Amino acid sequence: MNGMWVQLEMVAPSGLEPGKRISVLEMPAGATIRDLLQVVVQLFGDRARELLLQPDGVTPYVTFTVNGCRVSLAYVLNPGDTVTVFPPIGGG
Image 1 (cartoon, rainbow, N blue to C red):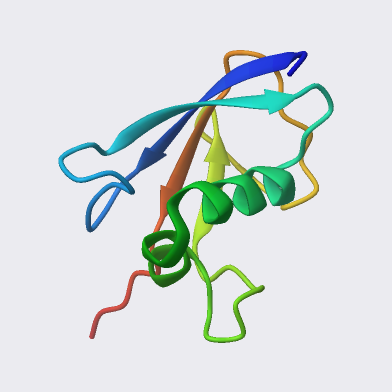
Image 2 (tube, rainbow, N blue to C red):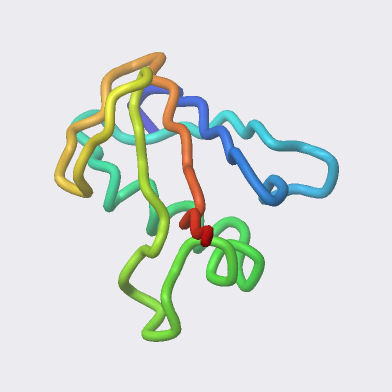
């Protein structure tokens, strides 16, 4: 693959790989957050679906930031970006 490396950080409850909250992934140039989400689901399967997607299997219920700024699924990634995934937060 002729692409770039991005870092994926899971804030909570845990990472996609046992014992790891941070994963480094290679993505093609021009990849978006939506593309990253598809790659993550392909790589990590059911665990990624559980942590990231609503029951329809398509719509994310998490929030994404890149280098500390909230972004949409259409955001185009750059080499070396750090993508952080935040789960929904509730309280009362």
